[in-house]
Image 1 (spheres, rainbow, N blue to C red):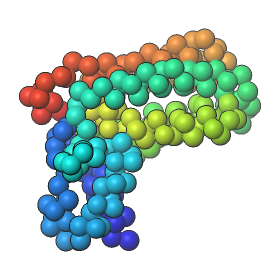
Image 2: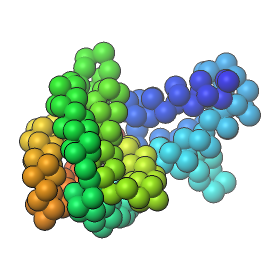
Image 3: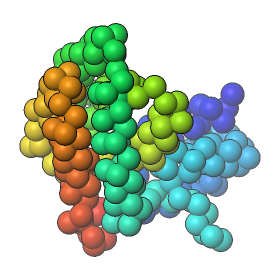
Image 4: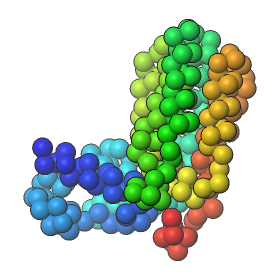
Length: 220
């Protein structure tokens, strides 16, 4: 479907940083650029808004979320509150098969390049997916699909903030953070694993807190 194609292109353009934080997403311009109708573009934009990658502004159309949007900190706070608790359940309930899947997911994440010249200065789609899978499998041992659905929603909502944060903190030790998460989980050390995960999520939020003015936001 045309709307699916437009949605995919728009989503990737936002995630690649082709639109600055707060930039307007004008349906008329997008329709002209994509060679499609306004109805198709609007349908795609509504989906992008649902992913947390754009805002629908009252009487002002659509825009990329602002860099200093309070929402990012609220999402990070929700994740720090919920995910360490779910991880504790996962460590308590996870079986040997869960352990094997955690190890395999971490291996794939560690072996997937985070950046590639052809994909610009933001991390690659392959690394992004390996990252999501690792974090989700860590929690899957909880055996509660409702909790996992909550994780899925929060993960999607925070994807843009996660990319911006990673772009602004290129020296962050992602490899070490994920290795410590895997080691603590497989050692069944719930206290350490929960603390490492909370700190991991806090580091992502911290990468956004010092960019509060318009000029700084343009430079991400």
